[in-house]
Length: 503
Image (tube, rainbow, N blue to C red; front, side):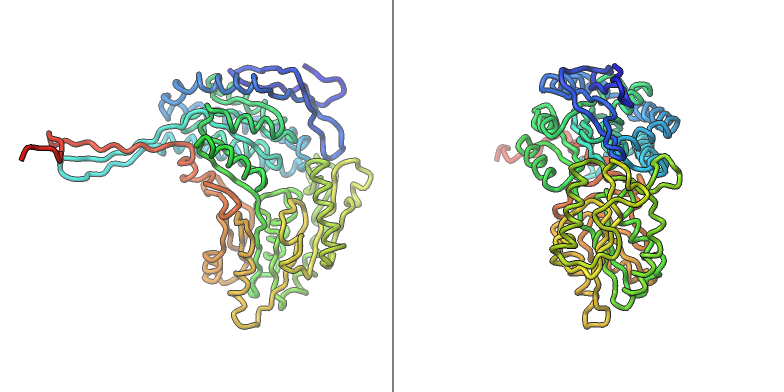
């Protein structure tokens, strides 16, 4: 199935443990060069139904496989992922435009960590229920049962990581999955499916269909889908959740954010600058949890801006396979156009002060045809500006000064930080850990950090508040999103309590 002149073979669908073809294709593009990488077979209604039927056929056996046996199979998949880490990372770099220095150390690694975590969790009794001795002759016990066939709809910024964040607890809990990667970054999906098969995951347990929003819509509305897990922007998530609700399906939604990164007056300057840079420029700013609203006290503003500018030379765009490169292009042409519009709006209409960058390409890649944009810093921003209100999802840092000597300044700062319909993440930098805990407790966000930014280990449950999502992924609570609970009361007294006895 080779495609002449393209870097990768044609990418089929995968269900029933085999590669499957359809009649139409689309292309995935290398964002660093604006050149096609591969032809991707697009799912149609019949292939989606076939993939779901394959999962339905596999469910009775997989769901009754003892958790320890499922764990052993999934741990073999973990070993294969780690064995092929660099190969998979190269694919992610080509497809997403992220530097190999990032994909080789973060994307595959963190996905494999989550798969290992859930495999070990279910093996160690993570799916056990509870018992309650209600009275001397009555007991209550609870059990957890898998949901059935679930749909996973991935995002383009962390393709294989998100595929594993969804499939790991899903499969560990005994469910089957039909997974749709983003049409912008589909190349990981077939590799992951075949790794699962090589590890011993039975045919039909993990399946892949390709396509855009219409394919996701067909998955979400299919009557045989018990749950939908979606990662993406808020507006799309609302549509997916609405469609799922019509069928009373379980949902997990990890959506966008406009997260505050709060620098308190006593913060260590170096840590604060490093944290703000990680919260805005890592992965070229294409991270849901980015802390794009950086609140800096007036007393520290000049020093913060100076040190930030001094360190911007450490953001290095260039050859994505060069280990020194740590900044790549944006993922697609439409997204590049969107981010560029926001940067121009910040300059021309919001009237924010452009401290660094702008709408052009970094000098080191000025001759590239890819979707590059400079890391950009605005300062003297206000809460009413478009660039501080809407999610840009690019490398755009907005500094919002605050007065740290005015009465009730901390209360006002917290109110400003919470003044957004989204609530995905938030963070605080301070030397006073007591104060850090108190501020974080008041921030309306589901993922928070003190004196760091961005780390999401397998053990940490993550999920958004307000418009930023429903439910959580990862951690012990994450498995609960993939099971349904049953309560049973057992009466051992030998008689039924009744209101209908003879007088």
